[in-house]
View 1 (tube, helix red, strand yellow):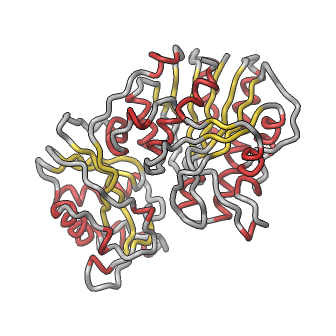
View 2 (spheres, rainbow, N blue to C red):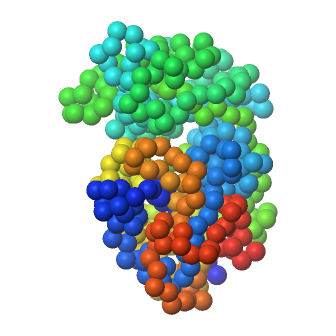
Length: 400
């Protein structure tokens, strides 16, 4: 038996008037998910423990079977594992986004945050910008590391876990009261703007109609994580396929195989076929038991507030990830159990995460059913199927 998690990051949403009061998942054309739902089971799962902030960090730990209350030490330390940034027990890791701030105001504090991703800047351009920041701001106490796209890292020697604002939570707002209380962090953010605002990369981006990546933004502070190997409890050899450092870091921390797919970028126009093929190869050729396929696109489109693009991201997930994996395993004669779900909602109307329950779809090729439902939030919530502790979903999938 092979086991697959297909996770559409932030895929769940709320009814949207322009979609006829349907959610993007409900509105999107998803024939493969609906077909598997009618042969399987749908229901709701609570992935974010009560009282914890809704994020891809806590939620994906939960889906993978790690109780966030016990194993979560912060988002950035997980990303540090992925990019190989060394951490001592006394270090603090912080995410360093390259964001777009408005530029017409007289002071940094008066500026507005326009885009948390700088139009999903390429890793190549971002690395050049971060190098400029490093030349001016890096010290023995503060070390910068390049990640992927707009997502980078700062390691703070003998730092402290400080409360910091997530940039995607305050889009369109003035930043004055959103800045770190810590003086060093606040001053580095302000200086980063002076370094980046007229950088040649950003001059060219403006000419192309792209948002300039004109400031660093620190958030997600945490301590060195301590996770146990995925195989230790599940007795399954697992692999992770994701474009984002957070998920790769979770895989490194849990001793899963990390598969890098060329052209996979965490956006809408990612290498879907490469991810699907990699999933099939690791299961059918490399002999692995379990693969976790993570797609960031729906979440990014939710943060951008784009209804059209979020629907498109969901449809591409259905046609170019779920269909080829399911059909490929069937053609290979492999029995399999597949669960499809979001980690958390990222509602278009809010452009940030919520901790609401999310719908899951579970298909077992050896125990097909005959149902009339479709895979979406509304119909999943109408069933009696509910998993109140998200970290136990993996036990259900793996039949532990």
